[in-house]
Image (cartoon, rainbow, N blue to C red; front, top):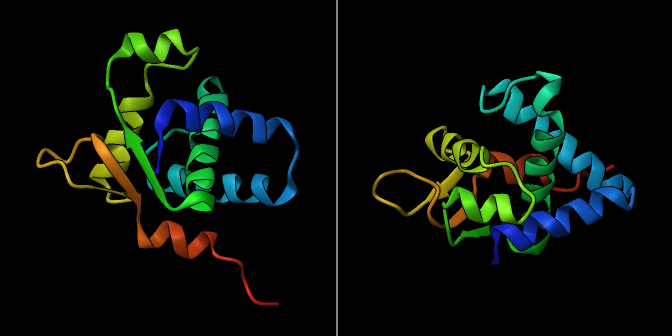
Length: 126
């Protein structure tokens, strides 16, 4: 389980490396996020939506969990990330695409990928 901000930075590096399997997983998650209404299909936010999807794909490759240690907008801004990340993570938790143990159903602490996401990310038999 990795902290969200370093995981997002690592996900950006993986996207920049043009790994076809990783790119496919990120696109699969992005399609699920768009179809469930978590993120819009507007090009204005496309880069950030793709990074969020890539972060979840990377979490799947590691162990399926993400740790949100802070929700402070200043921390995300200082790391060069958009402050909308917490909003999208809250939406993921509300729609149960991420599983949280927080009583408020907010993206706090340990977040696990849902069965739906892990199902679509599993390697498919040929």
